[in-house]
Image 1: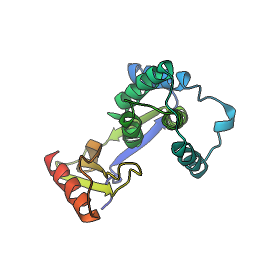
Image 2 (image 1 turned 180 degrees about the vertical axis):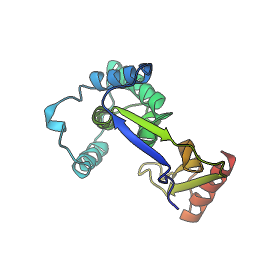
Image 3 (image 1 turned 45 degrees about the horizontal axis):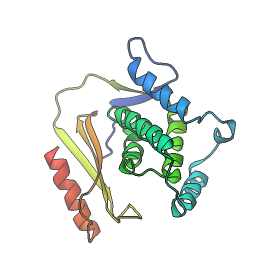
Image 4 (image 1 turned 90 degrees about the vertical axis):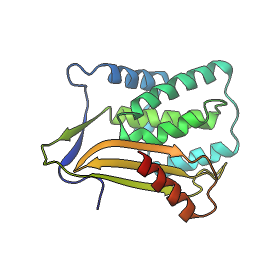
Length: 193
C-alpha cells in the first residue's frame, strides 16, 4: 500500500497559523540569508538544477570561514525544520553531512532547499478521526546513493492507520555490498524505530 492514505492530507499554506511563529521565523531566516528570492530561480525545474549541482560538485571549492559559518547555521535551521517537514528531510540531511567542510556546491544545494521552502513555506498535516489501527512501518533505501562514499541512505515512515507518526532519513554507517544488504539494514532500522 501507499504510505499516505485518503485519511491523511497535507496542505501548503502561504502564511503561518496563529501561534506557530517559531518555525516560520527559521524558514524566513533561511530564505533571506541565502538570497534565494532572485527572479531567475522562480521557474527553475529540477533536472536543470541537478545537472548544475553535479557539474559544481566535480569542481567544488571550500567556502571562506565566514561563508562556512553561515552555511552551518543555515544547515542547522534546515535540520530543525526537517523534524516536522517530511518533504525536506532528505535534503536537510544531505546539507548537514558536509557541515565539517562545506563547499560552494553544498551552498548551491542549500540555496536550492531554501528556494523550495520559499515556494512551500508551510506544510500542515490534517489528522482526521480514525478507529485505532495497527502501527505500520515502510522503509526504503537508495543503494550506494552517495557518489562520493558509495553509502546508502535509509528512509522510512511509521504510520498509525493513515497518520504519519514518525519519519527518518539516515545515511547508513557501512557501505552495503548489495541492494539486499542495504534493504536489510533499512528493515532493521525500521523495526528499531
